[in-house]
Length: 89
Length: 221
Image (cartoon, rainbow over all chains, first blue to last red; front, top):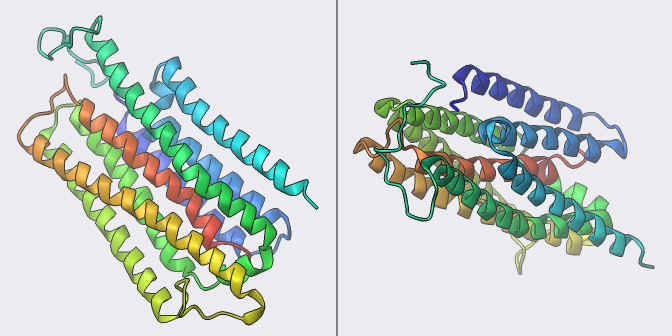
């Protein structure tokens, strides 16, 4: 199906707003929370791009599974690697 | 006919013999690009994990080193790329609607934005050269943090450099699409190359969406 242009414009505006938010939050000292907030906002932006610009929301279940597999693999990669490093010394 | 429906295309678009129907063929193209993008996640993933490990080991040095990056230029570049994703999506939309001129126009704007990103990036690289922040013999930094700061900048140049390389490839792909689109290769029935190229372009944008906060926005307060 063809995604309506209005959807693209709306997603774009949200992405720009999230960009502004990321920079604004980075300027405020929230201690150890800062990197996690930045990461969360980046994840939301990435999800919006994947779902709407990359049409995964309108694609088949198989496409959704392949796309998710990539990102889940990344989580495993990060988790196991950090588990190794953080349990040293 | 509403814009959400496509005409029956079975007889006009060539169907390769190993597919049951045109929709399966289209889905296969989509999936093929997605599988490739998953391998790209593997590719960039290694760099991101290296970054995460070293940042957690040398958080103070990384924060200090990061302050030498220009947050504003990075924000402008992020804006440029997000806009390019919008124009890419709009060109895909135009291609799906069979609107040749709009397809070419939006592809061209996307290409210009991609080139603008690379231009700004090269300014940034040049500034780093002037500030003696390119890892190597002429690297200068606070002696207490010099080794981890070099690690930060190695990661910075490799990650943004590999990303920029992907941008160059993306620009090349778009140039080819512009040539094909202006020759009328894409119709309402067949816009697959534009769609899958869009997937690639959006992916490269997503990588930057993570690169910007990770590299530029460490501890600005």
